[in-house]
Length: 174
Image (cartoon, rainbow, N blue to C red; front, side):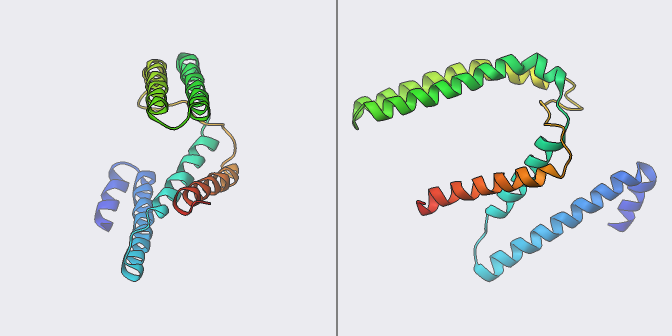
């Protein structure tokens, strides 16, 4: 492994070699944690990877600069897709509250969800294609808030709290 890192360092750049080395260290620490969970408790905790993914996502969303061209190309369609999502949720809640339990409510909820999904997909697919077409090798997404990375710790804390609440709500009924 050391020889391969030296080849990458001399052949490409030392930044790439160090990035590979850091990824190896991070993966080793995570696999040791997974081995301990599996060995001591006899189970695999997917929450470790979910928390890691939430942390990485918040770091990108907070620190990466917004891609203004992507916003101008697909922002309107994405906003319309989001509006249709909100309308679908509102209509679903209305149907759920107003119609008593039975086949009519089931079919009404199915119609609301499917109709909302179709309208959301129309605008979402249009936005996705437009956004991903903007410098796909470099960005291909909307970017983030462009704030200093330290703020991602705060956002990550709120995201982790939201994830913990969701898990507690679903699995424990809190």
